Image (cartoon, rainbow, N blue to C red; front, side, top):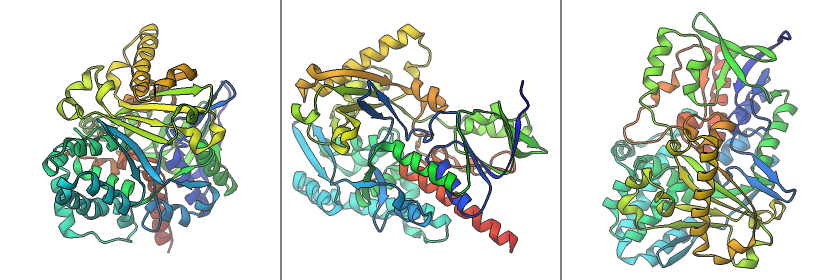
Length: 498
């Protein structure tokens, strides 16, 4: 075997997803020697794309990116990091077009207009809608500002802290059913939770209200040129700032010395680092470090956490623009009121593909360079995918894809005649390409009463977990967490140096 090349870094960042790239940019801008490393051939983690047949570009995960505008944490973070104006962000005018029974609501991205829509469509729920909005602007906002609190830029309301603790102990489903009586209104909010990567029957209500604040009350944007354009721009700027980016290189082990992580080993490199940031799943740690009592204790605590949901996505390439067959909007959401009766029970049945929320993204409206592309997505979990042999796995993928195509075709029947290409990804696909345990696309499952505070203190010195596995999924959290962690570390080092 060839001798490994030696590299020294002040900061080693394992994972070139959005968290790692933003962290790397902030650290490099402070004059540090920074190495960002990833096993994938592309940077971005889930923020990547792939091309097929020379005419279709499919985005692996891009949806609406929240957190813009004067009250948005993401715009604040990217602006302060000198990254905001490097990316071509485009603004959404509508959140989605949701089908519930016979209703088809085109939901405005303007918060005042959205609330007015709710009051108009569900006049009997007026009082409850106002209470819901108050909870979003109260507890949801306070929880949203936790990142700014860590930077010393926000003070929490004691009253909202107490209310927030109460909400963190119940599910979103229970919260909504207590608040509203109209089944279609409850279904609407249960369905919108798909944008958070959770099912309402299991996610805690405070987590949902945090998401509701950023989804309804901050500006939403998307990236012109797909999410890969975002990731590539962040990577290029990181290198321009003096950082070293290494892809196609898997970390085989973290080096330790007396209970302190001192870098990592890969096939080609021996990287020594003063500080290591790990953006992947903490469940990987036992496979990367030597046994120790501290690691055993940490691993025991990990067993209390559940892997979050993954996604089943059908990528469709059409022979003509979707608008020519009546698919004119950029985003559709199909919801079933039967979800309220059997969501949890359906989790072990293929019937979930009929009643769990179905999201449809018409990327050709957002950017014509994608080609004539439609993507169908439902949340999914690992249990049905990881134990199948190769042939059974292929058969099941095709069968479930057909179920979702049929479901979409019940509203847009001409779609079937114009499918020229289709591909599918499952939680198993996510595990293969991103090393995401359980095939989760959204970190650990945010169920009521869960405890993730111990993740703030890894069992080794010199190691820090940063990212959506620790604090919640989504493009906005991923980038904000990278910015916040790097900014706090820069401040600490300046203070220590002083």
